[in-house]
Amino acid sequence: MTAEDARLRLVDQLRAQGWITRPEVAAAFTAVPRHLFAPAGTSIESAYANDVVVTRRGSDGKATSSISAPWLQAHMVETAGLTPGARVLEIGSGGYNAALIAEVVGPTGTVVSIDIDAQVVTHAQEALARAGYPQVQVVHADGVHGHPANGLWDAVLVTVEASDLPPAWTDQLSRAGRLVVPLRMRGNTRCLTLQSAGDHLAATASVQCGFVAMQGHGRDPARQVPLRGDDAVLTLDDDTTTNADALRAALDGPRVEASSPVTLDMSMGACLESLHLWLASRPRPYGVLRVDRDRTAGLLDPQDRFFCPTLLTSDSLAYLTMRRHDTTTWQFGGHGFGPHATRLTSDLMELVAAWDQHFRAGAGPDITVHPAGTRLPDTERLRLLVPRRHTLTAITWPQTSR
Image 1: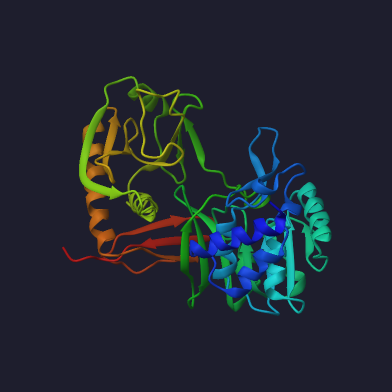
Image 2: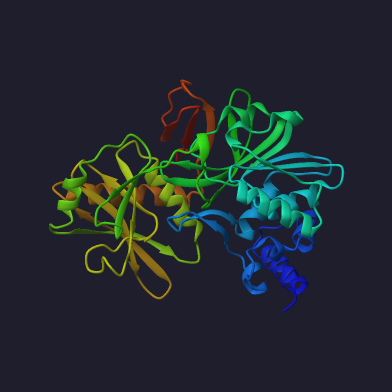
């Protein structure tokens, strides 16, 4: 298969899945040679697969730079609302995404891409030159400071996971501009498209995603609590406190199991994204469990081995499970460990039932971002507040009739 054929196939796939709806975005994906931005030796098949291509790893083997999955890049470029002549700042470089943006904004537009890693900058500059996009400026800098030299931006696209919004990103954004950012909220990362709504920002689009974490002054990793070495790790992304030794000991005790009457048609993948954010939105101790299924077989069997919602006390935990119900559906449940396992699993099942009512009513949350220290008016609706250094994110769920 030629690179041209692979690009056309990818565009057809992204259109069929609904990720590309605008002709100018389809034209950009058709034009930009993605394989020229991939590491040497990457096959055409791999370069144009609808998946991530890792371009750089740290000493620990973890990815520090990558070409994001095409579906996610298409989503970001589409929701940014880019038009010819637009001025766009990209935080986190690699080259390919900047080339897509350059195609959409055209010769009268401006594209600046920033990265903190000098090797990533060099790679991006060389790949952009090979691909025919010398007009894209690639800057070696800490993206937390933005790029104030060129005035205000019509859009800021962030291609690294952030836990907060540095002031520079909004200060350098035009009033009608859009900020597209993968924002981590209590362990849940959502690619948010944010626009000004007076004294705060409001999300007009939200999709679950994964990105390499931000480095430099914006680095804010979530806390990792090993429960069985690297085979079972609990992630905490707020001020939740636990007794790690007590949680490890709890796993040596009996497992409490509970079932929910709520079932899920596995063709409805967005359900799980909604449920995960719903469970995180409760104002109670919460974490995310990651396990190696093979090494913890017989002990832990979470709904998602990479990202499983988990309710906590200092010495107990209960995580979400899912088992096949019939040929087309799966049934939710919960497993608990520790002195408070029975109560936690019961609470978890009640939360799943409450979410089911919201989801069937088509009710999703509003996500808004406010300056740190903002006092929001009281509401009877369920609201999670995520305080960070610079911002306060509010995830507010609508009320549903009972």
